[in-house]
Image 1: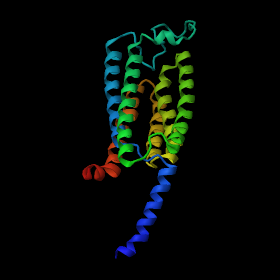
Image 2: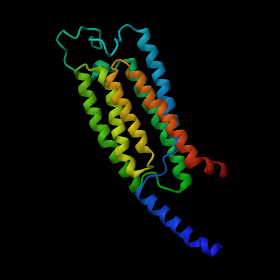
Image 3: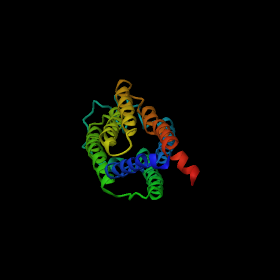
Image 4: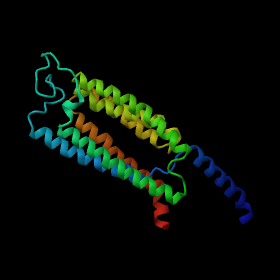
Length: 227
């Protein structure tokens, strides 16, 4: 019986080796869960600031960020205008916290699987994620300069979704479906401008938690039980 299973085991080992060389499969489901939790906490704090401070007009209003009427001549855009903004601080802290936690959990899983964190597959993944993110970031800066704040949240979701779809061929295939969901949310947000924070929380928060939980259950649960 063992001799009959030997060819199957050999094929499985070959397949596993090929997958490791072409795909970065050490993404941890806990990374998605932690990133989603960070996003929800950040959205909760941002929502409190928006509703408690009249300086922040609704995205759908024809009033710019500083409370000036949009009909007035726009002042030249400068990123320094936003450096003291508490919403920007929340966004930066949320991103840093999510990145550190995601990196930590992915590093731990890579170490367990004996896969280098910065290998050929991870470099490909990084490049394919970076291109849509960098282009999207420049586009969003232009939206900020035009005071088109209602389009920033859907823009974040759309470009992030494109990045996930673009990178899915170099990591777990399920990432593609997370990307499709982000794209759909971003397009839906275009129909409901003014509710970007809620769509942002749903996309970066709830969807990440659902995705991370599903990935942990499918790929990591049994391995964690063994360890």
